[in-house]
Amino acid sequence: QSMKVLVWNIKKGQEKGLEIDLPRLGRDRDLILLSEGYLKPELVDLFESFQGIGWDMGISFIYKKDHNYKTGTMIGSKVKPEKVMITHTVDLEPFIHTPKALTMAKYPIQGSDKKILVISVHATNVTHQGAFVRHMDQAFFEIDRHDGPVLFAGDFNTRTKARTNHIFQESLKRGFQSVDFINGHKRMKGMGHFLDWAFIKGLKVKNPIVYSSKASDHQPMQFELSVE
Image 1 (cartoon, helix red, strand yellow):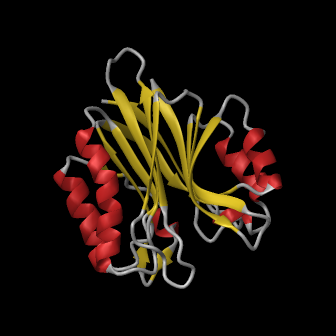
Image 2 (image 1 turned 120 degrees about the vertical axis):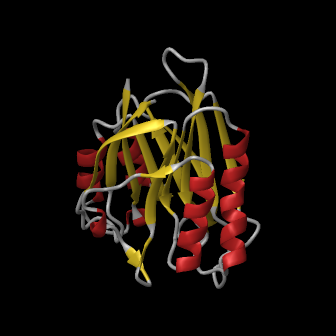
């Protein structure tokens, strides 16, 4: 069986057009991984309009300036997770003094006793290399304890060569491959480096494509996965 996936940093729905583009790109998806999900009423309505999709969210923080709305990483799925884990960074973003959250969930695989581990990431950003490594270690801790396929995707904030090298070295060492988008150049860059990635292990990928949308500064990534 194959799973259709959408991965996207939706920039808290601050730009116009998300109410059109998210349903357009996400309607037929089995898994939706969002960075910068935001629980303001019109976005909650948008998420709830996805029929048959259940949502889990790792709340990174609450916007006191904006009606105490919550923001964080999200996973939407047609299959109910057997386990959901949320972790927060020890290191806080400077200036705003907020942590980042990882949303991790395990799902059953039809015809197998193994589970698939799905991790939605929005990595620590305006922090030094040590903070980035500690954040990724939280994901790798769960990955190392998991026996089965893994999807690890989202906005990694890999805006330096050191960050990019670290995530690739640690992923490849664990048997991951990076999803190679045919038009990957469309992805958002920070300081000349791509920020959004999808890493897979024990999975085969089909039709990886980056779409264009004005509804966020990041571009939506789509692909299909099947268990090897």
